Length: 180
Ligand code: ATP
Ligand code: MG
Image (cartoon, rainbow, N blue to C red; front, side, top):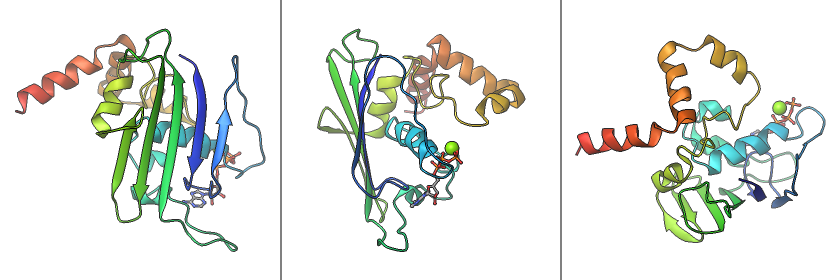
């Protein structure tokens, strides 16, 4: 399922609103050390529902908001928008174009939307679940992750296999039903 565009505003080093249009084929991102390449992949993971600040190299989630520099003040919120071509219906939606948005304010307030309709974080997570594109799936492999998968405990490795096999959504729904 092709990515169409990514818009980053106030996320980590991206103080200026930045839009990346993805064309067909493979996209490579190049740049010097510290220029923000990993921040781009983290922005993608974040808008797709990442909940671990640690895995985004921070202590608290608000650490992802632009913290200011010598020449610019810190920002009050971060916003990331990711647009997908869903014409092959790989995501759990009948729409051909899907745009997800996540916004976080310094006071902790958060906003999520799918196609401009306000939603919960869980709705975004469920959209990707079992598509093989979840935040933890093999579609996004960060620096050091391959080694981490090899060194992980059997139970952690099992959850990666379950997501790839497409049963993670049913397991989550079962847990939710049992806790009601
Ligand atoms: P490398 O080639 O070394 O992997 P990279 O291109 O992947 O580098 P990133 O790790 O994406 O670089 O970017 C690191 C930069 O992002 C650092 O300069 C860091 O200060 C900056 N940064 C991270 N979080 C924030 C934040 N909240 N506010 C401002 N800048 C931030
Ligand atoms: Mg990097």
